[in-house]
Length: 381
Image 1 (cartoon, rainbow, N blue to C red):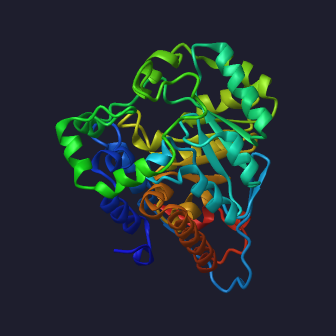
Image 2: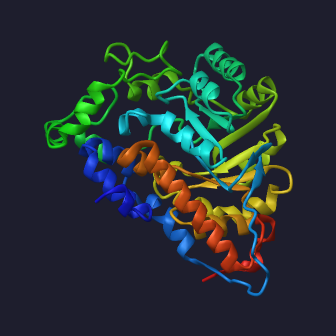
């Protein structure tokens, strides 16, 4: 199977599975507990049908949106995800380049493997910085100041990861950073030697956003211990309100799922919220973001930009979310599988296919621009 044989999410996933050692593939592919929420994230879209209109003159299509002050050429963006250079040696550089080519936004994680500054210098497309709240308040302030100086457009605080999810696939293989593999996990690396050759042939793996705080040599701090020892489980709304004021710009909370929390985000001055269950990787049994979208848009959609992620595999999924009132949607695994399969060429192909699906879907729906999508276009079974 080659990249040119990939036409959808499942094709890219298969190609990534062929290339990656089992523990790394399962880190991307897996979720928490029984992975029920992971499955529901995509199934939620299948419980909703599109109702197209015809004869609307759709010779030109405008799929641009403005979200959190950022003008995007298409209504989806590359969500921030961790450890990208483990999946392909180009990592965030490939994702940023592909996002810039298509005029959309990309995110850089606190656990990213390329620095904020390098990516900001190289690509002028909108950049999000996703970060976690640490026990050390000075560290939080320093990370925000660094992002401000780098020219980051949107600050995105993840609020659903106060503790790590129970990802049993990783426990079985021993996947961790630094690697502490089980025998079964080591055997899976042995049968995919090309990944190891590529890993060793390129620059050493590091976490430049946290290089002063997490020791990648296996000494002071693993990523697992980073979550349990450095993140602050006492974080509350007052803490976040202080950060919003300090940032004094586009500030988004990722991991909002209830109307009450959405309203609080508005009250403390956030400019965006991402409805998200972290791709099913945190609280298994959590509701799908798409299923929560309508009630949260109804509650706060006229006061704050409502975005969602989770389970998006098709252009029609994006159109359903936009029809319910989302300003844009984020994708994660959708670009991580193609990144793992083929680097920048893979991400570009995936984004291009999604863009084409959205354009085709809008024509078939009878919509020339995103603002013509509405709940009139939807019926729930």
